[in-house]
Image (cartoon, helix red, strand yellow):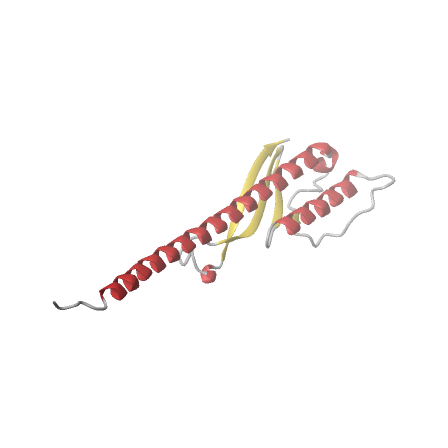
Amino acid sequence: MNKQTGATMIEVLITILILAIGLLGLSATQMMSLKNGNNAHNRYMAALAAHEMAERLRANSDGLELASYDGQTADGTETSVDCSVKCSPTNLARLDLYEWGQVISTNLPGGVGLIERDGRQVTLSVTWDEQNTGQNRSSAESGTEKSTFKMVVEL
């Protein structure tokens, strides 16, 4: 009777190869899930920042009329204004822009906010660097791409 040797070893090697390919696919799926979760969090923070600024604009309607907000950007480099005693609408607008810039720069990578006004209609744009989920999406070399959240409000 001829004994066949080595068949079990080949079966084990094939099983390990199939398992390794499955684990690589699982890790790529996990990487995409983490990137998409992080991107969703960034979109939420951008929407929250835009809504917060819309409320600040509503609260300082005099500053809006004086065009203190029109065409302004906020990226965290603004200087603070002391409004502890009395604050003019223009200074309140500068304080609002400072605080909005702090929120954006703290919560969004490369975040910048922009306010554009057309009459009573105000467009709030928040732009940030988002992790690319396109080509090479499961690798570390996938890089970033700019994403923008725009909100148009009538004040």
